[in-house]
Image (cartoon, rainbow, N blue to C red; front, side, top):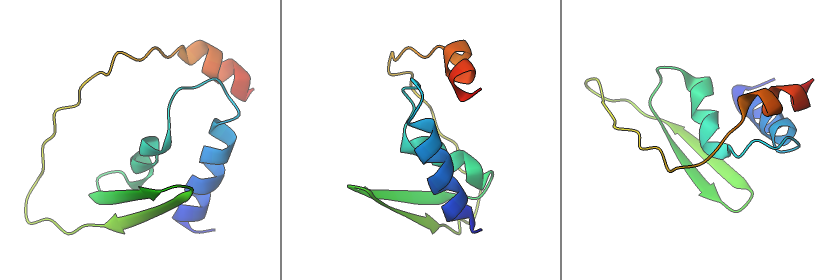
Length: 76
């Protein structure tokens, strides 16, 4: 199974739970590999990027609420 297939199946499982997370979480599967994710409806394209040096980002909390305990109990 390819990494993209694995990501697709985990996302399909995840959306059956009350987790407010979405497709952007798929980037975690690539670890330290920089990627670009392009979303077009149900189609997701991932492009692995080559960068000459480390990149740093500021992540902003968009004031969403997520109850990890509820999410994990639904996975069980």
